[in-house]
Image (cartoon, rainbow, N blue to C red; front, side, top):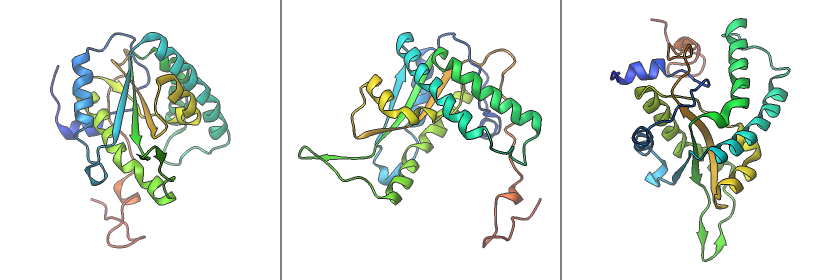
Length: 224
């Protein structure tokens, strides 16, 4: 395996949904998870948890739940206009790839469910629900770990993609995996070796001067 640098990984870690069913060695998954737990978390609480799903029958059941997320996706995107920065071809490919995964999530050799303990139990009583602000900020303690998973996969030649549609059926996912009430799910990542013809490549994004401001809103970052 050829080693790549950090910035090459950042710039080439494309979302890959077409994955081979070939087994992924456990030692690679250990490296991926070890990268995940090196991420920052709020107040260093490290309240994250990662459920690695390898059993074929359990993967199939999670895949069936995710497939129903395709119905939600189709409702959302039925009338949504194409983003201006995407061509008709690239947008059509995005939608096709997403729909491919609806049917094949359970066939990925490894699924990783990224979770976070967002409520605490004290003397047998569940703590009150977090405030809207706390709920909004909670992702800061899990999504950096998810990004580390994505970059570690890229460095190891593994494909993956961040998905969240399973959350529309979170109770069913939690029941299937035996997750306790105080643990919530934030991302489901299929992991495997990319299928032929679906490799890594440039991650295309809007120019910086369209998304970054200097000193105050509306003063665009200067073009270079």
